[in-house]
Image (cartoon, rainbow, N blue to C red; front, side, top):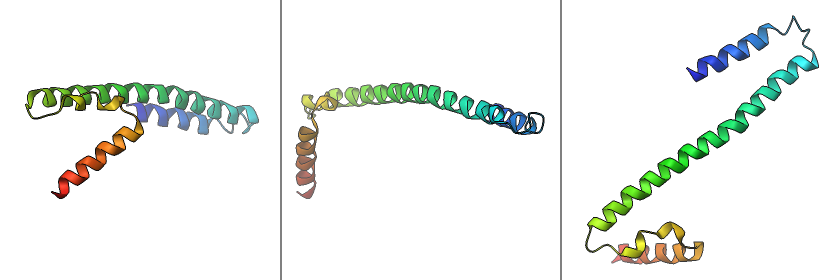
Length: 98
């Protein structure tokens, strides 16, 4: 639906080109419109990704809490620094080799 609407807007803009004699204002309308829509979509996509990420973390937290052998410190792993995450990754690599 959104694609169809966007396509129709671009088509209407293209068809109106000869009416406005392909002026700079005519070109500015589509440029400004697409810039504003892109700007707004970034926030919409980011919000959606944050929600999905939070849901995934909650699911993983539930799994970790249900396994007795799981380490509790893994629940808040996303709060670790880059260095701490790297050390943990190396631990898992060493464990895989065993």
